[in-house]
Image (cartoon, rainbow, N blue to C red):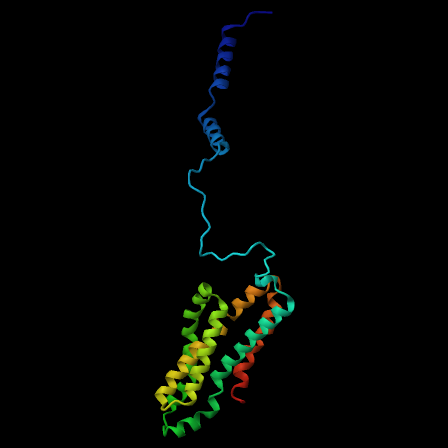
Length: 219
């Protein structure tokens, strides 16, 4: 075999140089691969459980409303729907009696007569801004109880109002308290029913707020 020539030696030296020293792009790829495979050391301490976070003792916790029996869920949804029926009912039930109210207070102001009915809905607008956040802090049931008591008190106050100004104020606060079931009723259903079955339950629930304003003027 003939000994390698000078050209062959130059070729071998060039190929060995390429093998030993890869291009810069390959060096970057190697560095990136090393960085991706290298373990990440996190010196931060493990996060502690927040005392304000409400959680359940596993997926089968009987206190979780999602694990309640079907009958208990039906009763809970029926009560919420009934409350939501009464609250909108009070918004429109006064409309047929407005002429008698204005006659009792010796007033012919038509704008004021309309405002007595609609001021209840003003309370409906501002109530959820307060009630909905409080229900996430203190729970749904306490808000239902407090607002139901206030609703009854202000409804009675409307019946014994000494003048139109007091009637307007009492109607506003009655609407403010009466907005509770409208504000957190769907949230209560979300607590009780899995998302796959909420459509049917919501369809049954809305009969309350739907029939309330319809039957109010008839009553």
